[in-house]
Image (cartoon, rainbow, N blue to C red; front, top):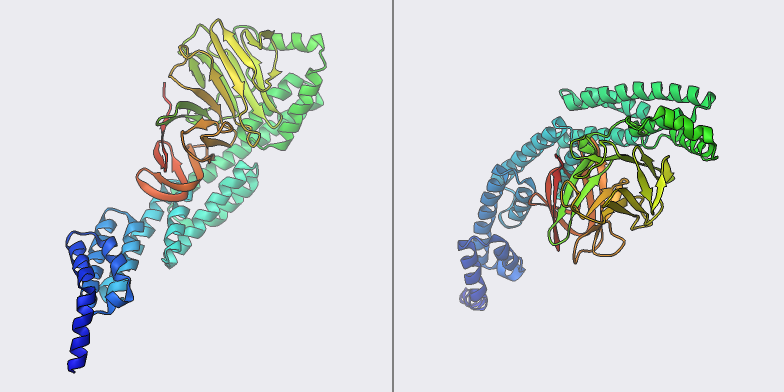
Length: 464
Protein backbone atom coordinates (compact mmCIF):
# COMPACT_ATOMS: atom_id res chain seq x y z
CA UNK A 1 0.00 0.00 0.00
CA UNK A 2 2.81 2.37 0.99
CA UNK A 3 4.58 1.59 -2.34
CA UNK A 4 1.42 2.44 -4.28
CA UNK A 5 1.03 5.78 -2.50
CA UNK A 6 4.71 6.55 -3.06
CA UNK A 7 4.38 5.81 -6.77
CA UNK A 8 1.30 8.06 -6.98
CA UNK A 9 3.18 10.84 -5.18
CA UNK A 10 6.10 10.56 -7.59
CA UNK A 11 3.79 10.60 -10.61
CA UNK A 12 2.00 13.67 -9.27
CA UNK A 13 5.36 15.37 -8.84
CA UNK A 14 6.31 14.48 -12.41
CA UNK A 15 3.07 15.76 -13.94
CA UNK A 16 2.32 18.53 -11.45
CA UNK A 17 3.41 21.40 -13.76
CA UNK A 18 1.31 20.04 -16.63
CA UNK A 19 -1.73 19.46 -14.40
CA UNK A 20 -1.44 22.98 -13.00
CA UNK A 21 -1.21 24.36 -16.53
CA UNK A 22 -4.33 22.40 -17.54
CA UNK A 23 -6.23 23.74 -14.53
CA UNK A 24 -5.21 27.30 -15.44
CA UNK A 25 -6.28 26.80 -19.06
CA UNK A 26 -9.67 25.49 -17.96
CA UNK A 27 -10.13 28.43 -15.64
CA UNK A 28 -9.30 30.82 -18.49
CA UNK A 29 -11.67 29.06 -20.90
CA UNK A 30 -8.91 27.84 -23.23
CA UNK A 31 -10.54 24.48 -23.77
CA UNK A 32 -8.77 23.46 -26.97
CA UNK A 33 -5.33 23.96 -25.42
CA UNK A 34 -6.40 22.01 -22.33
CA UNK A 35 -7.71 19.19 -24.53
CA UNK A 36 -4.34 18.99 -26.33
CA UNK A 37 -2.48 18.51 -23.02
CA UNK A 38 -5.01 16.00 -21.67
CA UNK A 39 -4.59 13.93 -24.85
CA UNK A 40 -1.40 12.55 -23.31
CA UNK A 41 -2.50 9.12 -21.91
CA UNK A 42 -0.14 9.30 -18.93
CA UNK A 43 -1.54 12.70 -17.90
CA UNK A 44 -5.15 11.62 -18.48
CA UNK A 45 -4.73 8.42 -16.39
CA UNK A 46 -3.52 10.31 -13.35
CA UNK A 47 -6.21 10.79 -10.68
CA UNK A 48 -6.01 14.57 -10.97
CA UNK A 49 -5.94 14.17 -14.75
CA UNK A 50 -9.19 12.17 -14.66
CA UNK A 51 -10.84 14.90 -12.58
CA UNK A 52 -9.67 17.58 -15.00
CA UNK A 53 -10.89 15.43 -17.93
CA UNK A 54 -14.40 15.36 -16.45
CA UNK A 55 -14.24 19.11 -15.90
CA UNK A 56 -13.08 19.65 -19.50
CA UNK A 57 -15.86 17.41 -20.84
CA UNK A 58 -18.52 19.44 -19.03
CA UNK A 59 -16.99 22.71 -20.23
CA UNK A 60 -16.98 21.44 -23.82
CA UNK A 61 -20.64 20.42 -23.54
CA UNK A 62 -21.50 23.87 -22.23
CA UNK A 63 -19.65 25.53 -25.10
CA UNK A 64 -21.40 23.21 -27.57
CA UNK A 65 -24.76 24.41 -26.20
CA UNK A 66 -23.74 28.03 -26.79
CA UNK A 67 -22.71 27.15 -30.35
CA UNK A 68 -26.05 25.41 -30.87
CA UNK A 69 -27.95 28.50 -29.68
CA UNK A 70 -25.96 30.56 -32.19
CA UNK A 71 -26.78 28.00 -34.94
CA UNK A 72 -23.06 27.24 -35.36
CA UNK A 73 -23.80 23.56 -35.78
CA UNK A 74 -20.36 22.42 -36.97
CA UNK A 75 -18.64 23.98 -33.95
CA UNK A 76 -21.31 22.48 -31.68
CA UNK A 77 -20.79 19.00 -33.15
CA UNK A 78 -16.99 19.27 -32.93
CA UNK A 79 -17.22 20.23 -29.24
CA UNK A 80 -19.66 17.38 -28.62
CA UNK A 81 -17.29 14.88 -30.24
CA UNK A 82 -14.37 16.18 -28.18
CA UNK A 83 -16.46 16.11 -24.97
CA UNK A 84 -17.16 12.40 -25.49
CA UNK A 85 -13.42 11.69 -25.34
CA UNK A 86 -13.15 13.20 -21.87
CA UNK A 87 -16.59 12.83 -20.27
CA UNK A 88 -17.92 9.69 -21.94
CA UNK A 89 -21.30 9.13 -23.58
CA UNK A 90 -23.70 9.95 -20.75
CA UNK A 91 -27.43 10.85 -21.15
CA UNK A 92 -26.59 14.56 -21.25
CA UNK A 93 -24.26 14.02 -24.22
CA UNK A 94 -26.85 11.91 -26.06
CA UNK A 95 -29.52 14.57 -25.45
CA UNK A 96 -27.27 17.31 -26.86
CA UNK A 97 -26.54 15.18 -29.94
CA UNK A 98 -30.28 14.86 -30.61
CA UNK A 99 -30.73 18.63 -30.20
CA UNK A 100 -27.95 19.33 -32.72
CA UNK A 101 -29.44 16.88 -35.25
CA UNK A 102 -32.90 18.42 -34.84
CA UNK A 103 -31.40 21.88 -35.45
CA UNK A 104 -29.55 20.54 -38.50
CA UNK A 105 -32.78 19.15 -39.96
CA UNK A 106 -34.50 22.51 -39.40
CA UNK A 107 -31.62 24.42 -41.00
CA UNK A 108 -31.53 22.06 -44.01
CA UNK A 109 -35.30 22.48 -44.43
CA UNK A 110 -34.89 26.27 -44.26
CA UNK A 111 -32.33 26.11 -47.10
CA UNK A 112 -34.69 23.97 -49.19
CA UNK A 113 -37.65 26.28 -48.50
CA UNK A 114 -35.44 29.15 -49.71
CA UNK A 115 -34.62 27.24 -52.91
CA UNK A 116 -30.99 26.53 -51.99
CA UNK A 117 -30.55 22.74 -52.29
CA UNK A 118 -26.79 23.12 -52.83
CA UNK A 119 -26.39 24.76 -49.41
CA UNK A 120 -28.54 22.03 -47.84
CA UNK A 121 -26.26 19.39 -49.42
CA UNK A 122 -23.17 21.19 -48.13
CA UNK A 123 -24.60 21.38 -44.61
CA UNK A 124 -25.58 17.70 -44.51
CA UNK A 125 -22.33 16.48 -46.08
CA UNK A 126 -20.23 18.49 -43.60
CA UNK A 127 -22.14 16.95 -40.70
CA UNK A 128 -21.83 13.46 -42.17
CA UNK A 129 -18.06 13.90 -42.49
CA UNK A 130 -18.07 14.66 -38.77
CA UNK A 131 -19.89 11.41 -38.06
CA UNK A 132 -23.49 12.67 -37.74
CA UNK A 133 -26.19 10.20 -38.84
CA UNK A 134 -29.93 10.83 -38.88
CA UNK A 135 -32.80 9.36 -40.92
CA UNK A 136 -34.46 12.75 -41.47
CA UNK A 137 -31.17 14.27 -42.64
CA UNK A 138 -30.68 11.39 -45.10
CA UNK A 139 -34.16 11.94 -46.56
CA UNK A 140 -33.52 15.69 -46.97
CA UNK A 141 -30.16 14.92 -48.59
CA UNK A 142 -31.89 12.76 -51.23
CA UNK A 143 -34.35 15.56 -52.05
CA UNK A 144 -31.57 18.18 -52.19
CA UNK A 145 -29.33 16.06 -54.43
CA UNK A 146 -32.11 15.26 -56.90
CA UNK A 147 -33.19 18.90 -56.96
CA UNK A 148 -29.60 19.95 -57.64
CA UNK A 149 -29.37 17.28 -60.36
CA UNK A 150 -32.55 18.64 -61.97
CA UNK A 151 -30.93 22.07 -62.16
CA UNK A 152 -27.87 20.58 -63.80
CA UNK A 153 -30.10 18.87 -66.36
CA UNK A 154 -31.89 22.14 -67.10
CA UNK A 155 -28.61 24.03 -67.45
CA UNK A 156 -27.41 21.34 -69.85
CA UNK A 157 -30.52 21.75 -71.99
CA UNK A 158 -32.47 18.70 -70.80
CA UNK A 159 -35.65 20.44 -69.62
CA UNK A 160 -37.68 17.26 -70.09
CA UNK A 161 -35.39 15.40 -67.69
CA UNK A 162 -35.41 18.27 -65.18
CA UNK A 163 -39.21 18.48 -65.12
CA UNK A 164 -39.57 14.69 -64.83
CA UNK A 165 -37.09 14.50 -61.95
CA UNK A 166 -38.76 17.33 -60.02
CA UNK A 167 -42.15 15.70 -60.48
CA UNK A 168 -40.81 12.44 -59.05
CA UNK A 169 -39.26 14.01 -55.94
CA UNK A 170 -42.19 16.36 -55.20
CA UNK A 171 -44.15 13.74 -53.16
CA UNK A 172 -41.08 13.32 -50.91
CA UNK A 173 -40.73 17.10 -50.53
CA UNK A 174 -44.21 18.08 -49.40
CA UNK A 175 -44.50 21.73 -48.49
CA UNK A 176 -41.50 22.89 -50.52
CA UNK A 177 -43.13 25.66 -52.53
CA UNK A 178 -39.78 26.70 -54.00
CA UNK A 179 -39.42 23.28 -55.64
CA UNK A 180 -42.94 23.38 -57.10
CA UNK A 181 -42.34 26.93 -58.31
CA UNK A 182 -39.11 25.90 -60.02
CA UNK A 183 -40.83 22.97 -61.70
CA UNK A 184 -43.50 25.37 -63.03
CA UNK A 185 -40.76 27.69 -64.34
CA UNK A 186 -39.07 24.82 -66.17
CA UNK A 187 -42.39 23.77 -67.70
CA UNK A 188 -43.02 27.33 -68.90
CA UNK A 189 -39.47 27.54 -70.23
CA UNK A 190 -40.00 24.25 -72.05
CA UNK A 191 -43.06 25.71 -73.77
CA UNK A 192 -41.06 28.78 -74.87
CA UNK A 193 -38.21 26.60 -76.15
CA UNK A 194 -40.57 24.37 -78.14
CA UNK A 195 -42.17 27.45 -79.73
CA UNK A 196 -38.76 28.91 -80.65
CA UNK A 197 -37.62 25.56 -82.06
CA UNK A 198 -40.65 25.54 -84.36
CA UNK A 199 -39.94 29.10 -85.51
CA UNK A 200 -36.29 28.26 -86.09
CA UNK A 201 -37.15 25.26 -88.27
CA UNK A 202 -39.45 27.42 -90.44
CA UNK A 203 -36.80 30.18 -90.77
CA UNK A 204 -34.11 27.70 -91.79
CA UNK A 205 -36.42 26.20 -94.41
CA UNK A 206 -37.11 29.72 -95.76
CA UNK A 207 -33.35 30.58 -95.57
CA UNK A 208 -34.21 33.74 -93.62
CA UNK A 209 -30.76 33.88 -92.02
CA UNK A 210 -31.10 37.13 -90.09
CA UNK A 211 -34.21 35.79 -88.37
CA UNK A 212 -32.38 32.50 -87.81
CA UNK A 213 -29.66 34.42 -85.95
CA UNK A 214 -32.19 36.21 -83.75
CA UNK A 215 -34.21 33.08 -82.96
CA UNK A 216 -31.05 31.06 -82.31
CA UNK A 217 -29.84 33.78 -79.91
CA UNK A 218 -33.21 33.72 -78.14
CA UNK A 219 -32.95 29.93 -77.79
CA UNK A 220 -29.40 30.18 -76.45
CA UNK A 221 -30.54 32.80 -73.96
CA UNK A 222 -33.02 30.20 -72.70
CA UNK A 223 -30.62 27.24 -72.98
CA UNK A 224 -26.94 28.13 -73.53
CA UNK A 225 -26.14 24.52 -74.52
CA UNK A 226 -28.92 24.19 -77.15
CA UNK A 227 -27.18 22.26 -79.95
CA UNK A 228 -29.76 22.95 -82.66
CA UNK A 229 -29.51 26.71 -82.01
CA UNK A 230 -25.70 26.63 -82.14
CA UNK A 231 -25.72 24.64 -85.37
CA UNK A 232 -28.31 27.02 -86.88
CA UNK A 233 -26.21 30.02 -85.87
CA UNK A 234 -23.10 28.58 -87.53
CA UNK A 235 -25.07 27.90 -90.69
CA UNK A 236 -26.52 31.41 -90.69
CA UNK A 237 -23.08 32.96 -90.17
CA UNK A 238 -21.75 30.94 -93.07
CA UNK A 239 -24.58 32.13 -95.31
CA UNK A 240 -24.29 35.79 -94.27
CA UNK A 241 -20.51 35.71 -94.38
CA UNK A 242 -20.51 35.08 -98.14
CA UNK A 243 -20.26 38.86 -98.64
CA UNK A 244 -23.49 39.40 -100.54
CA UNK A 245 -24.63 43.01 -100.71
CA UNK A 246 -28.26 41.96 -100.42
CA UNK A 247 -27.63 40.41 -96.99
CA UNK A 248 -26.19 43.68 -95.66
CA UNK A 249 -29.05 45.67 -97.21
CA UNK A 250 -31.59 43.31 -95.68
CA UNK A 251 -29.95 43.79 -92.31
CA UNK A 252 -30.13 47.58 -92.55
CA UNK A 253 -33.85 47.32 -93.42
CA UNK A 254 -34.51 45.10 -90.42
CA UNK A 255 -32.41 47.25 -88.09
CA UNK A 256 -32.78 51.01 -88.78
CA UNK A 257 -30.47 53.41 -86.96
CA UNK A 258 -33.02 54.33 -84.30
CA UNK A 259 -34.09 50.74 -83.49
CA UNK A 260 -31.66 48.35 -81.79
CA UNK A 261 -31.19 45.12 -83.74
CA UNK A 262 -29.84 42.91 -81.01
CA UNK A 263 -29.59 39.15 -81.37
CA UNK A 264 -31.82 38.30 -78.42
CA UNK A 265 -33.75 39.47 -75.41
CA UNK A 266 -32.34 41.86 -72.83
CA UNK A 267 -30.52 39.96 -70.08
CA UNK A 268 -31.88 40.06 -66.57
CA UNK A 269 -30.24 42.56 -64.26
CA UNK A 270 -29.49 39.75 -61.79
CA UNK A 271 -27.13 38.36 -64.44
CA UNK A 272 -24.45 40.73 -63.16
CA UNK A 273 -22.75 41.66 -59.91
CA UNK A 274 -19.77 43.58 -58.54
CA UNK A 275 -16.65 41.95 -57.13
CA UNK A 276 -14.02 43.86 -55.14
CA UNK A 277 -10.66 42.43 -54.06
CA UNK A 278 -9.01 44.13 -51.08
CA UNK A 279 -5.67 45.33 -52.37
CA UNK A 280 -6.55 44.08 -55.87
CA UNK A 281 -9.22 45.66 -58.02
CA UNK A 282 -12.92 46.01 -58.75
CA UNK A 283 -14.80 44.12 -61.44
CA UNK A 284 -18.25 44.12 -63.03
CA UNK A 285 -19.12 40.45 -63.61
CA UNK A 286 -21.65 39.64 -66.35
CA UNK A 287 -22.74 35.99 -66.52
CA UNK A 288 -25.15 36.19 -69.47
CA UNK A 289 -24.11 35.15 -72.99
CA UNK A 290 -25.58 38.40 -74.31
CA UNK A 291 -24.28 41.73 -72.95
CA UNK A 292 -25.53 45.17 -73.98
CA UNK A 293 -23.44 48.35 -73.66
CA UNK A 294 -25.36 51.63 -73.63
CA UNK A 295 -25.72 55.00 -71.95
CA UNK A 296 -26.29 55.62 -68.25
CA UNK A 297 -30.05 56.21 -68.57
CA UNK A 298 -30.70 52.88 -70.31
CA UNK A 299 -31.23 49.34 -69.07
CA UNK A 300 -27.96 48.24 -70.65
CA UNK A 301 -25.97 45.52 -68.93
CA UNK A 302 -22.95 47.84 -68.96
CA UNK A 303 -24.07 51.49 -68.61
CA UNK A 304 -21.55 54.18 -69.54
CA UNK A 305 -21.31 57.89 -68.77
CA UNK A 306 -20.83 58.68 -72.45
CA UNK A 307 -22.62 60.15 -75.42
CA UNK A 308 -23.74 56.83 -76.87
CA UNK A 309 -27.15 55.29 -77.57
CA UNK A 310 -29.18 53.23 -75.10
CA UNK A 311 -28.17 50.00 -76.87
CA UNK A 312 -25.04 51.09 -78.68
CA UNK A 313 -23.48 47.66 -79.09
CA UNK A 314 -24.17 44.07 -78.08
CA UNK A 315 -21.60 41.34 -77.44
CA UNK A 316 -22.75 37.74 -77.84
CA UNK A 317 -20.86 34.61 -76.82
CA UNK A 318 -21.33 31.15 -78.27
CA UNK A 319 -19.07 28.11 -78.65
CA UNK A 320 -17.32 29.74 -81.59
CA UNK A 321 -16.23 32.77 -79.57
CA UNK A 322 -17.47 36.35 -79.25
CA UNK A 323 -19.39 38.39 -81.82
CA UNK A 324 -20.07 42.12 -81.67
CA UNK A 325 -23.43 43.44 -82.94
CA UNK A 326 -23.13 47.16 -83.72
CA UNK A 327 -26.38 49.09 -83.44
CA UNK A 328 -24.50 52.39 -83.75
CA UNK A 329 -20.99 53.29 -85.02
CA UNK A 330 -18.33 50.93 -83.64
CA UNK A 331 -14.69 50.41 -84.65
CA UNK A 332 -12.54 47.35 -84.05
CA UNK A 333 -8.81 48.07 -84.20
CA UNK A 334 -9.62 51.36 -85.91
CA UNK A 335 -11.79 49.77 -88.63
CA UNK A 336 -15.46 50.76 -88.70
CA UNK A 337 -17.86 47.78 -88.60
CA UNK A 338 -21.55 47.93 -89.50
CA UNK A 339 -22.55 44.27 -89.27
CA UNK A 340 -22.05 41.41 -86.80
CA UNK A 341 -18.29 40.77 -86.52
CA UNK A 342 -16.22 38.23 -84.56
CA UNK A 343 -13.92 39.76 -81.91
CA UNK A 344 -10.34 38.53 -81.85
CA UNK A 345 -7.94 38.40 -78.91
CA UNK A 346 -6.50 41.79 -77.82
CA UNK A 347 -8.85 43.71 -80.12
CA UNK A 348 -9.40 47.42 -79.38
CA UNK A 349 -13.12 48.30 -79.43
CA UNK A 350 -14.03 51.98 -79.91
CA UNK A 351 -17.62 53.09 -79.28
CA UNK A 352 -17.11 56.87 -79.39
CA UNK A 353 -14.35 59.41 -78.96
CA UNK A 354 -12.45 58.45 -75.80
CA UNK A 355 -14.65 55.41 -75.13
CA UNK A 356 -12.45 52.39 -75.79
CA UNK A 357 -12.04 48.88 -74.42
CA UNK A 358 -9.37 46.24 -74.87
CA UNK A 359 -10.77 42.73 -75.37
CA UNK A 360 -8.70 40.05 -73.60
CA UNK A 361 -8.85 36.26 -73.21
CA UNK A 362 -6.33 35.72 -70.37
CA UNK A 363 -6.54 31.93 -70.10
CA UNK A 364 -6.81 29.20 -72.76
CA UNK A 365 -8.62 27.13 -70.09
CA UNK A 366 -11.70 29.37 -70.17
CA UNK A 367 -13.77 31.32 -72.67
CA UNK A 368 -14.21 34.03 -70.04
CA UNK A 369 -13.17 37.37 -71.54
CA UNK A 370 -12.25 40.77 -70.13
CA UNK A 371 -13.25 44.20 -71.40
CA UNK A 372 -10.59 46.48 -69.97
CA UNK A 373 -11.37 50.22 -70.19
CA UNK A 374 -8.54 52.20 -71.73
CA UNK A 375 -9.94 55.22 -69.85
CA UNK A 376 -11.96 54.93 -66.65
CA UNK A 377 -13.84 58.23 -66.66
CA UNK A 378 -16.75 56.93 -68.76
CA UNK A 379 -17.58 53.93 -66.58
CA UNK A 380 -20.69 54.11 -64.43
CA UNK A 381 -18.55 52.76 -61.55
CA UNK A 382 -14.77 52.57 -61.27
CA UNK A 383 -14.07 49.04 -62.51
CA UNK A 384 -10.70 47.63 -63.53
CA UNK A 385 -12.44 45.34 -66.01
CA UNK A 386 -15.78 43.96 -67.14
CA UNK A 387 -15.70 40.16 -66.82
CA UNK A 388 -17.74 38.31 -69.47
CA UNK A 389 -18.02 35.14 -67.41
CA UNK A 390 -18.33 31.92 -69.42
CA UNK A 391 -19.32 29.56 -66.60
CA UNK A 392 -16.03 29.99 -64.71
CA UNK A 393 -13.06 32.31 -64.32
CA UNK A 394 -9.74 32.23 -62.46
CA UNK A 395 -8.88 34.27 -59.37
CA UNK A 396 -5.27 34.68 -58.26
CA UNK A 397 -1.91 36.33 -58.75
CA UNK A 398 -0.66 34.93 -62.07
CA UNK A 399 -1.14 36.43 -65.57
CA UNK A 400 -3.67 33.79 -66.64
CA UNK A 401 -6.13 34.88 -63.93
CA UNK A 402 -9.12 37.02 -64.86
CA UNK A 403 -9.48 38.54 -61.38
CA UNK A 404 -6.28 39.76 -59.76
CA UNK A 405 -5.84 38.84 -56.08
CA UNK A 406 -2.33 39.69 -54.80
CA UNK A 407 -0.23 36.90 -53.26
CA UNK A 408 -3.05 34.38 -53.83
CA UNK A 409 -2.72 30.93 -55.44
CA UNK A 410 -5.11 30.30 -58.30
CA UNK A 411 -8.76 29.68 -57.38
CA UNK A 412 -11.67 28.85 -59.68
CA UNK A 413 -14.90 30.87 -59.47
CA UNK A 414 -17.87 29.11 -61.10
CA UNK A 415 -21.45 30.12 -61.75
CA UNK A 416 -23.47 27.56 -59.83
CA UNK A 417 -26.87 29.13 -60.43
CA UNK A 418 -28.07 32.03 -62.55
CA UNK A 419 -31.44 32.99 -61.04
CA UNK A 420 -30.82 34.00 -58.32
CA UNK A 421 -27.10 34.39 -58.92
CA UNK A 422 -24.91 32.03 -56.92
CA UNK A 423 -21.22 31.15 -57.18
CA UNK A 424 -18.97 28.23 -56.27
CA UNK A 425 -15.33 28.96 -55.34
CA UNK A 426 -12.68 26.24 -55.29
CA UNK A 427 -9.06 26.62 -54.23
CA UNK A 428 -6.07 25.10 -52.45
CA UNK A 429 -6.60 26.74 -49.06
CA UNK A 430 -9.36 27.23 -46.50
CA UNK A 431 -12.20 29.50 -47.65
CA UNK A 432 -14.37 31.43 -45.22
CA UNK A 433 -17.75 32.82 -46.32
CA UNK A 434 -19.56 35.38 -44.17
CA UNK A 435 -17.29 34.41 -41.23
CA UNK A 436 -18.09 30.68 -41.59
CA UNK A 437 -15.32 28.25 -42.50
CA UNK A 438 -16.22 26.31 -45.65
CA UNK A 439 -13.01 24.39 -46.42
CA UNK A 440 -11.46 24.21 -49.90
CA UNK A 441 -14.82 24.64 -51.70
CA UNK A 442 -17.51 27.18 -50.89
CA UNK A 443 -20.92 27.88 -52.39
CA UNK A 444 -22.49 31.28 -51.78
CA UNK A 445 -25.19 33.59 -53.14
CA UNK A 446 -24.82 37.31 -53.83
CA UNK A 447 -24.07 39.29 -51.66
CA UNK A 448 -21.22 37.63 -49.76
CA UNK A 449 -17.93 38.33 -47.99
CA UNK A 450 -15.31 35.74 -48.91
CA UNK A 451 -11.96 35.37 -47.12
CA UNK A 452 -9.03 33.48 -48.61
CA UNK A 453 -5.76 32.94 -46.68
CA UNK A 454 -4.22 35.98 -48.41
CA UNK A 455 -7.13 37.97 -49.88
CA UNK A 456 -10.65 39.18 -49.15
CA UNK A 457 -13.41 39.35 -51.77
CA UNK A 458 -16.64 41.31 -51.51
CA UNK A 459 -19.43 40.34 -53.93
CA UNK A 460 -22.40 42.71 -54.19
CA UNK A 461 -25.46 43.08 -56.45
CA UNK A 462 -25.12 45.72 -59.14
CA UNK A 463 -27.81 48.39 -59.19
CA UNK A 464 -27.24 51.62 -61.03
